[in-house]
Image (spheres, rainbow, N blue to C red):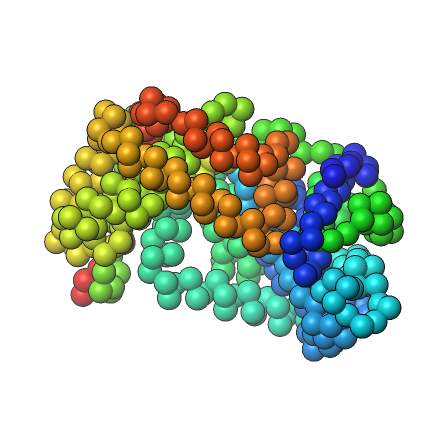
Amino acid sequence: MEKEIYPGVTLTVIPTKQFTTTQIIVSFTGVIPDANYLTTRSLLAYMLETSSQKWPTQKAVAQKLSQMYGASFGTTINRRGRTHSLSFVAGVVHDNYLQTDTDLVQEAVMFLKEMIFHPLVKEGAFDEDTFKLQKSNLATYMESVDEDPRLMALYGLRSHYFDDPSQKVPQFGTPATLKDVTNQDLYQAYRTMVTKDQVNIIVTGDVDPATIMGLVATLPLGPRTKLDSTIQYDQPAQGSVRKVTVKQQLQQTKLNFMYHLPLDLNSNDFFAAIVFNALFGGDPQSKLFMNVREKSSMAYYASSNFDVLRNVLWVQTGIETANKEKVKYLVAAQLAALQQGDFTMATVENIKKSLINERISREDTQATLGTRALIGNLLGRQYSTAEWCQRIKNITKDDIVTIAQQASLQLVYCLEGGH
């Protein structure tokens, strides 16, 4: 069941007896105006996850969750194209499994109401000690990225590819912009979020939609402007390939590639791209895995992925520095083979089976159902598992070749190891 409660506020209820818990997601989504926005929203997620007026410390929040028979709660952030979502996620055991008259779903909604709409605020700003603590915690997390060379290389690739500053930086922002965030900035960002962001509420579990509607109606939400349909970000392809090398004291060189891959969300492109990516480098049967990593032994890892909301495809490899030019050639050769139709349908059918099995297996996780519903709401289209699987089955060799031919190399980024 999906229902618009107010303009810009949508409730989706997925009744199912599959799980022993009920999960509630309240997600706020806004268009990203600048890079500072990402940092501020990340800090806001830290603040709103750990305190409120009623429960002013992390310990108090944890004690309340314990009283709710071990309920779970947390915040997540996600950049999707031109938008950024800050989501509150709570999970409670279904009442049938408890020898009590407690209505845990109602209690969970009231808990979310407190955490979201009654933050620990004093005189137009957050509690200063809590603000300083969470700002320090976020700074520590940001610095930890430098301890993961593979992640650092991926962020470096994106930073040098995108022109828009808000697309260049990680979805959690940067240490440089974090330093400048004031308590007042953060509170203003909070007020903007709760009054202006599009809101999507997703509830999955053994629940009655009418009851959930009544509970959600108690949240202090009102009409707001809906996001327009063009949440997709597209940076036009350039005619030349840029090359960037950054030297670090690493044991292993990270050689990454960024391609422009324009995809029409209203066509068959999305499903063709899923199969193409799996065939290129997203599956153990893929060309990158088999020919670059296994047969040639030129890479410790070699994989591909794509972002349909930012029209990019990227390849990540971990290599010996001496093999850099050989790996460049091999990666280009694998894409060229797909562009020329040099692959067997037997491999494609095996990959389709893997994709379908993975899709079906993920039905067993409540988080997946909630996330799919949320993304579907943002995009304005929902695919049942049966429809998704059929669309994958229908992809032809020509569909794969057409998508492969749209991929154009834009950037080669090398985080080069050595001393």
